[in-house]
Image (cartoon, rainbow, N blue to C red; front, side, top):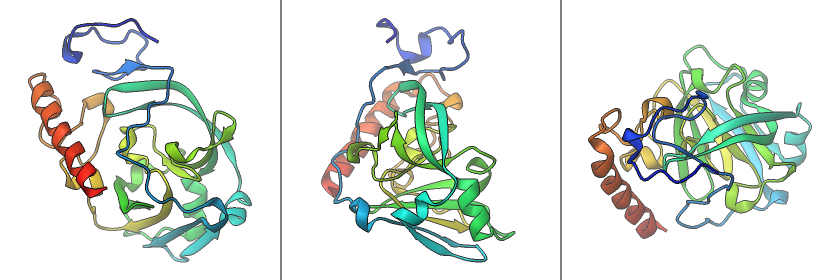
Length: 227
């Protein structure tokens, strides 16, 4: 873990390795920052649906999902709450594989990820294809635990980690960008960690730190009330 730096994120020097986005701190832990785990579908009842603007929508059960080509993915992840974890190891199925089976229609431009607990996140299709995103069922060589999104979660490493929906159940392709859970509460619609797109209208300004922290507190309070 990096040494403690008392300076605010915007005053710290840039990472010389080029791996750590501005305002982030590296951790060897894997923090759990949800306001409570919803009632998660058990593995034996879990399904994943691919639908929307596809030629052949389908639903996979656990065995059907694992009959698809499986891959190991090694990647860095970055949380909006300012921690980064490097060289994380996941096992699962690329979204390219899932979308190839479904047949993506030409009008599709966005993906909505829906999960247990009425959670959702919105993504651009171009950000989750070409080997950029996957559905993971294992982390660090072990089955993905419930607190980290098991039995299966979305992983989109290039964006802040709230975009990587835990407890994933459905991916819907659309020509419309439909805001997800956190986006409706004020998080940035895109979430690029390299541009510090944390909160809507507050990204890319050093003066936004205090204001964005206040917004984060209001969002957490809203989530706690919801739960």
